[in-house]
Amino acid sequence: MIIKGKMIRTLAFIVTVSMMLAACGSKETASGTNSPAATPAAAAPGTAPASTTPETKDVTLVGVRDAQISSQQIIADKLGYFKEAGLNVTSQLIESGPDIGPMVAGGSAPVSIQTNFMDIILKSSNVPVKIVAPLAQIAGTQAVVGSKKLELKSAKDLEGKTIGIPNGADVKIAIDNMGKELGVDVSKIKYVNLAPSDAVVALQKGDIDAMAAWEPFITKAIQGGGKFLFSGTKSELPDKKGSVKWMSVHTTMQVSDDYIKKNPNTIKAILAALKKATDYINSNRAEAIKILAPELHLSVEELTQIMDRNVYSMVVDDTYVNGSNGPAVGEYLKSVGNIKTVPKADSYHDLSLLKAVDAGLIKVDVK
Image 1 (tube, one colour):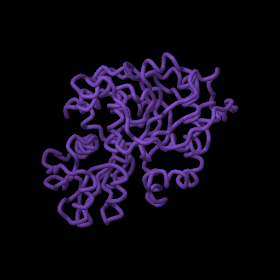
Image 2: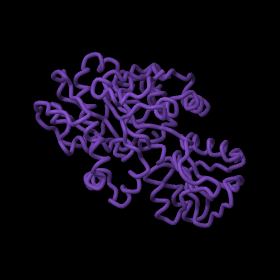
Image 3: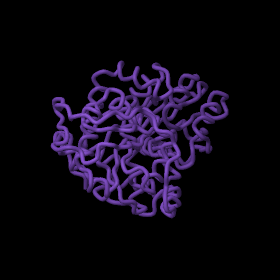
Image 4: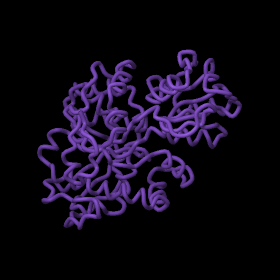
């Protein structure tokens, strides 16, 4: 996910360390309020709440204070959708996305929201956890921004230029695929290891030609005078403008195997609430942004730009299955040392509960 919910380049090491600990607890402070359990409300059109009472009504849902990761989680909490589903949810938002991996591995986050890349890494380390639903396509927030002085006649002009990017950042997938499609030798690009916040400063000072990172740093770089070049889903390069398929990564909800076995109705209730929140975000974007902005510590203007780069959807389609969980993604994670073996997608998925909530969300099978 991605650092701060987006890059997980160091997660493999962290997970390994965490699994050696007898107990792995979180010292983060929970965000959100505890609401008394309520009788499940009637389902909105297109959704179906749990058919029986949740086995566990008190749930801690661990997410990230990030528009890519926890927008639906926050909306469901603030608008009372969890309560309507008969749940008493503590919405725990941590500041650093990669920290969720060790929490899952250590057992302190049986129900969480992060990205499918994290689950690939967890499965490669034999952590018993399954993705139960996708929540958003967030590759549009994995992007490259050029300095205000950068002039490109074609994408090939990026050869020889300097890009600030964290080592192992997943946005490199978008750069590599851009190069393949547009004939750019990406090995001729000079990569400098810079944290996103440092890259924004370096870009403004003219120390680098471009930066590659994720939100909110992309928007901050553009606000500072940078020029959007391309992301995993959109390009403004001279020789390629419009939609592209250079990267696919999804926010997902994952649950430990033991929790799935013991609490299937609880999970269905959570998914029904998140589905309702997803519909609200897509139908009432301006109102959703007003709710989310103070929770995410962003201005309405910043959050509007960020959310416009995401696609909030719980649909399981080819883009999710092949683009986000296909062999190419696994091989990339293996090449940068995040995993040793590439797990099969069906080994870290259980979409049966999502199908029970709304069968229309399942367009293809995960294999």
